[in-house]
Image 1 (cartoon, one colour):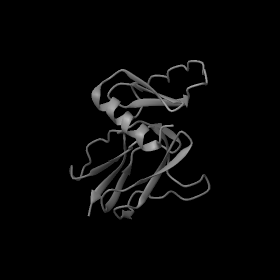
Image 2 (cartoon, one colour; image 1 turned 90 degrees about the vertical axis):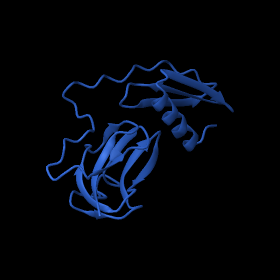
Image 3 (cartoon, helix red, strand yellow; image 1 turned 180 degrees about the vertical axis):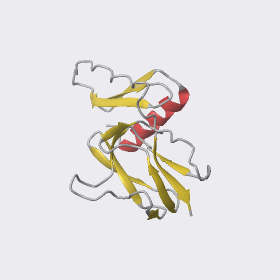
Image 4 (cartoon, helix red, strand yellow; image 1 turned 45 degrees about the vertical axis):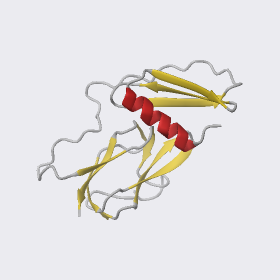
Length: 157
């Protein structure tokens, strides 16, 4: 069976290489990773013995959909983007009734949890890699995000 880190590494390799698709079977599990353009990749995993019907491709993003790229900030370009390390669903809070982990204007420390990206029913806490102030939240709550897509802009301290 593939572990989470192995799947993440495969996603990174497919994303950076431009390969259209990779499918690997190992120890009774199968993982297929499909390249989806420069924006990211999609992955699916299933037991090798299960014959799942083919799934439809997700709908293409419309031209007016947010791309995850922020417009140039008026105060300068010293902002640090925090990108999603995986494909999944972006959540700003640990549960629907809780306050968001961070809001615009909050000071964050390196290693502080900023959000959750759910991938394959696993809740992955995304931590800040620098200390600074949250300038912008680039994604909507409970929306899909791609590998490498920017989630936050942070002004370094």
